[in-house]
Length: 274
Image (cartoon, rainbow, N blue to C red; front, side, top):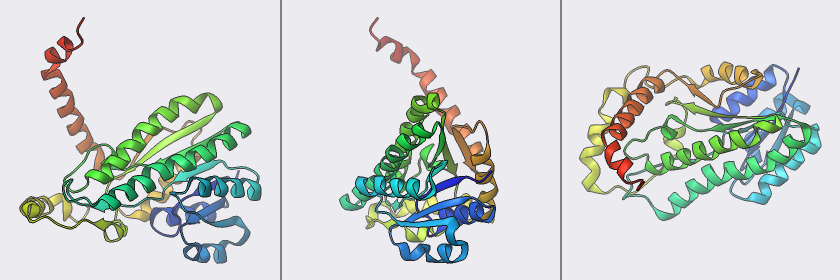
């Protein structure tokens, strides 16, 4: 049975690949982007199965308008994929104020506004699935990715609460957590103005083998099958990793965190006070 799927940031990258995969199998897809020009090829190829919408993700009214248009056009919305977002690279000290505000606006508040707009529709129809694009960098952070990680950590916390709040309405929530992929993310992200004091640290960081090994970055096209399985699952998971690089590192990081908490547990217990 075909589904109606709403995808933000569908003019390139994951969003476009996933839109094409859904359309190729017969789903109806609402594709959004800041500029509708980037969606024209999808509309030309797939005709009435696709609804292209211009969306300013940081504008709450624009988000509600887009969901209302999607519902009016197709009659229902089975899946919302909050894919759109932006990246900023820079150490914490280097971060430009406007760039920092912009990434939180787009990645966190954009996800929040779309989610808020989708929930009344899904509650009224008795179910749905909200897919939030997080990242491996929503689980752990690296130098120069602090503000991007902050936005994704925030989406993790927001969505974990949401998962518990809406499951009684038949609404599923999934955090999709890709490791690095060979998209245009690095080239399209904002680069902060460098401070020379961090040059050696950055050089050492990017000289590490995991940044240059042949399989360091996944093939974006390989994610389409996983997304099809995810939206078709009767009981989808709260979290889904995309790629093979993240889980081993996450296991080590969580083991280190648990060891540290355990080491300091006497201090923690005494801090409770009674």
